[in-house]
Image (cartoon, rainbow over all chains, first blue to last red; front, side):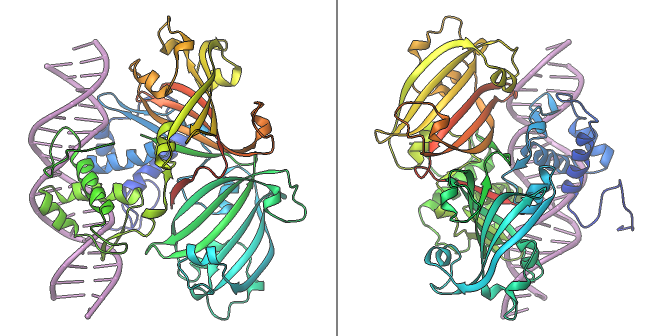
Length: 246
Length: 246
DNA sequence: GAGTGGTCTAGACCACCCT
DNA sequence: GGGTGGTCTAGACCACTCA
């Protein structure tokens, strides 16, 4: 088994269903099927890729959840007309940079501040910390094609970071910072709000500007809270979609 | 609201995994386990309810997606600390009334207008209609405990409704109206925006008030577009959460 | 009736976590 | 090593849609 292959054939360390979903998604993106066109049947796909029908179904389910396909009982699986209209699916946890990239722009970032300090009450509660626990606090502006499009205020428990970390040396993605300390963000609970510029209390920000604010608590695989953030997205610059199901 | 009878045994017309998830969810709500406490193992649950382990896993997965539990490889499944903090999960498609109820308030509704008219270009496109197709257009204000908390602008293709429908007689939920015509909303694609009162151009609305705006296209099981809506939620009155996963 | 997806099972084997 | 969840398979049977 485990031959050192690449490209097409499945089987490696990644789950079969994910590999299969990736390949099918790519074929959809390559417009192998038109909108509304029927994909091969589950049994055909199973034979083609030499996997069980359960695995095919798991892959197709992922595609349907992401809005790429629609499966109809007794009929088949079809390319969804929805797929084109989704840029950033909010169900998928992505970093700021990934979000900007998904919108076809070049991400950038500028740190306004980065320091260790005592946590505020609401932060401590969100992160399940003792009231005055130390945290790394950062303020950043996010750039897309050199233009400011978002602001983010982030707080990480100091205990998760090396004691000798120099806040001034922090730059780039906070996800990377966490991951280089063996902490892998897995899920977040996001609360969505509308806000205007006056909430930010920053110079350069028009107090009447509209923002979509995401207040998030991020967790790792063990459901440890690892990051509390408030991100203000300039209204109109991003498109956030959610697929809602009954 | 639901299940007054229930009774233990599974098996009926509803999927086993859903029945099982419902029962486990109820046991969680009844605080049978504390936050952080471990549930029985998958095999135990399988034996107890006399279903296969696959079915148990499907049920547990649903609970985890809804934020009730956390499953950890090699350890077990635990009651999630998150479960308490979510009011309205945006992934779940709910009507306005259901949303208000979920926040513990009494829903109300007032129709400002309801009429058949030609569709605007963006509506026709969203609903895949011919440019000037007829639509039922409504404007409503949504009340919670007698207070205005949201405004909704909805458009339904006229061809989906009886030709002799009297717009003046339309009241209450549009979901009900659709369902009484054998059209069942299944999914929607929601785009989220921030807006202020000036976007609404309604008297009684403070132009500086903040709103969270959900622009949605609803589809039925066959992915036919059936309803285009813009709903403005007064900021601060609702709590919309999303569970995001990598 | 033929063909499609929908559900569920039993079992094998792997990967992870603990003591 | 022993227990837990994670993945995948093969196959049975049901439910839906359409000609």
